[in-house]
Image (cartoon, rainbow, N blue to C red; front, side):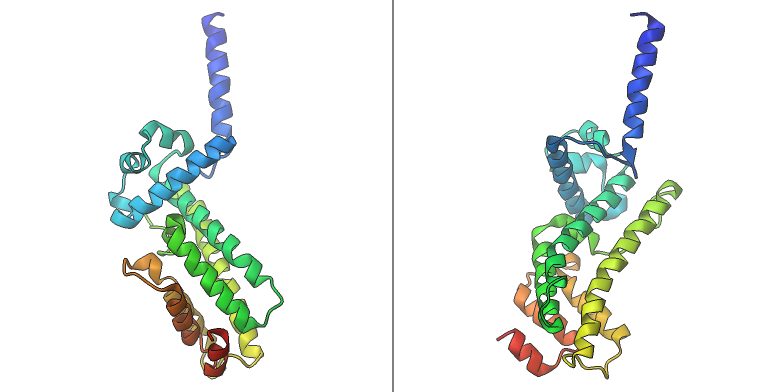
Length: 228
């Protein structure tokens, strides 16, 4: 094989690899590759949670999961790409946890309790879920990541909206206090539910779920029924 032919072959492989990146991450993965990515995302979420985006490093993430920097860069182009994909992965995990309850035919108060409990269980079990609920992406990820960061923020708002929709149903069904403005009760509900993402204090999921639904304005009699 001549030099020109080898160069063309290598260029084709590089082009194929570049084409397989989407949103900064390698998309075409084998099952083993997906497992590797999940391990990386959990390690990244833990590192970002401990030191913040600016202080965390690819080297620290690699060390956390017993890998090399080369493995991280095999999947991601930059630390910002890794940060955002960890958020997206965490949000997907949370949405998968609450979606069956959200789609059920139970009364709204029962669904809201189930969603709160599922959300808390997912947060406590999955570092990437906690990473996803710590706030919006940092502003200094770079202009090339602005669109992806905006998409992640939109995803988070849509996730919040699932709780808002069920809380609205509870208000219409008379199980939540309509004298309290929804613009206050929904943020209060979510703030309590996201405490495990923002604090290292130990929390009892059942106690947090009850506190969250109280903050959402559910009627005392309804709470007694749901938490009996």
